[in-house]
Length: 440
Image 1: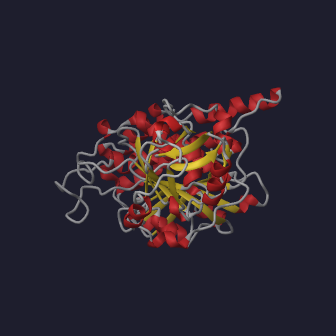
Image 2: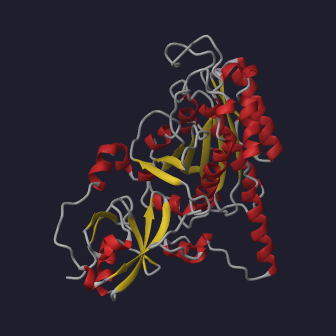
Image 3: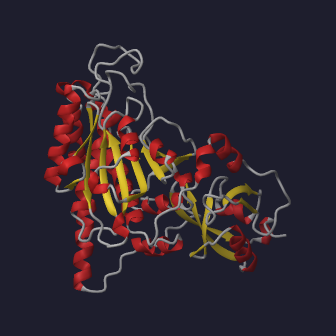
């Protein structure tokens, strides 16, 4: 959970959630029936367990599967394991001819689904995917060597597959299915130019042929969490998507590193290229990447659990939202250079009353970005930092930067400001103290 330290203070959970406009996460016990539903939902979320993820990684990263190269006998054996797991979990087949496989060439995606509970919204699908293929024995074009030895791909991407299986199982245990249809997709051919996810985007099997894909999540290499830091890609693909993920992060409190890069390097890209809002969770590269040494004993299984929990909460938030997100096509042209420009510290200026300077962000209009903290002002004394995002004033969510400016101008000499910092929510206090030189 978030560590609130002075001068920040911890908000009650329901109050904090309301402050960022996600009241669906606030739980109110109004009757015995609702209490039972609460407990059932909690049990579903608690089913995401590191021990189960470890079992899946051990099976997929075993030498017997020979590195799971796309279309190989090891890859086919991995597909069989995944179909068995989908059947055990109880998701419906979403592949060709009433089965779980979607075949293309010698390769096979493995697809499962849970139909949405709302007659209208269920025509939209929310996809969570992870690729199950790896590079087999390695070649000079796909391995950093040595080649000729089994590349087990425990992190890349048995870890993501394990996380997806945990999400799918949790969804089957929910007391009520979300409004939109959930699709659980295990991609083949990712290591061969993203063939599996690209095929699905172009040609969906019959059970999904009439569904509009509204959103997707990609889990790729989530098995090396270090310092609670999780890389998040794609939040620029829909307005407000970052705040959706920040809200979903409340139970886990991971440190989120948001990236603007939009590269053709994993299965999120075909969805973005097709105009579908998409995010990817990734715990970062390491020295075993595409080498035979990417083995199961190096995976941080305890770290898979919170990452998978965040993916589950994000999936359910979008699947149950009143409306699906609209694609923001300019995200395809954005990059880290643009992020650095937006987040750059503003030049010094004469401090106004609070000593806090912000800048709007088109992708997150309800969360102005802090770009100036003037010395010896209420903002500095309150603990504000460059890069914080303001999400609420006195526990009321913001409309945009103009709303923030107006409400601060009307505030008395003390005001509580809700902020997002690296994916975590805090509340900081601004207090005018003329004796410290903070007021004009």
